[in-house]
Image (cartoon, rainbow, N blue to C red; front, side, top):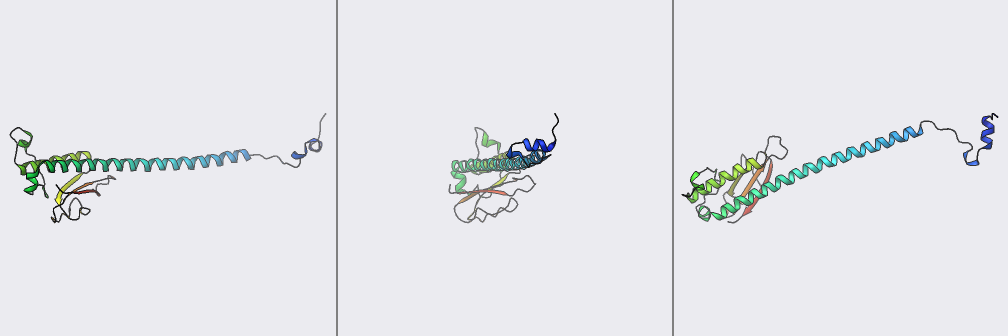
Length: 179
């Protein structure tokens, strides 16, 4: 018994009558879903990249904070060097006697502290460098020109590093304190 298409349509339920067959609609829906999924995954990748960059920035800032606390404690432990103004804009020089039983002078200890601190900065931060000086405006300067004005009785600890590793130490962390 072979039925014609008209006979089959006449026998079909009322809700199916008049429908035409759709070919390829499911494939288009799948392609659109894949496109939406791809855009979502690209967004998640971008978010992950920004998150990693911010985590690295926070890590470097924490290292600068720890280094500034280190030099502040070294300065406070050598009050004779502070009174002699030995820490102000000191380039630093390693003195072997400071690490021996014989000891060294307060000025030599200040220079040794600065030298060891700068070595730790160079090892812990990308292109890390720092200076300790008397400065009324600690939020200015560059590694080449630290802009220490020598005014006042506050010391400024200025630390620079290259956060984006492009060769220029542009990120500044500064801390003012009174010994």
